[in-house]
Amino acid sequence: MNKSIMTRKLKPNGYIAVCQCGKTVGAIDLNRTDRQDSSRILGKWIMDGCELKPKFASTWQTDVSPCICGG
Image (cartoon, rainbow, N blue to C red; front, top):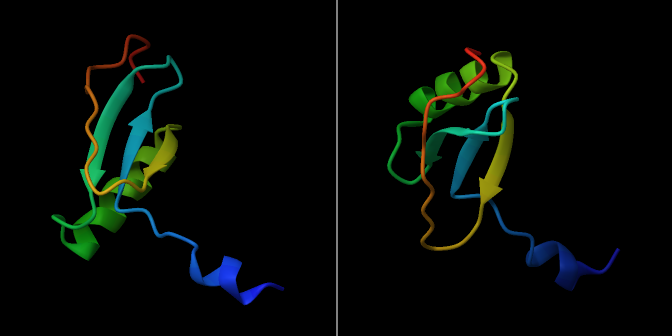
């Protein structure tokens, strides 16, 4: 494996949660959230069936709204 590719791999600094209905229902900034709280929130989103989308940029934003499916 090429070592230069391995060293450039980025770690996400946040996630957004997208419900099955397509609405963005949550966002988390990992740099500002306690590790235990982050784990709990991400686990809840997974159990709710949300798709998690990682964010890698130094700054990012998203609009969060309630889901329309009741999920």
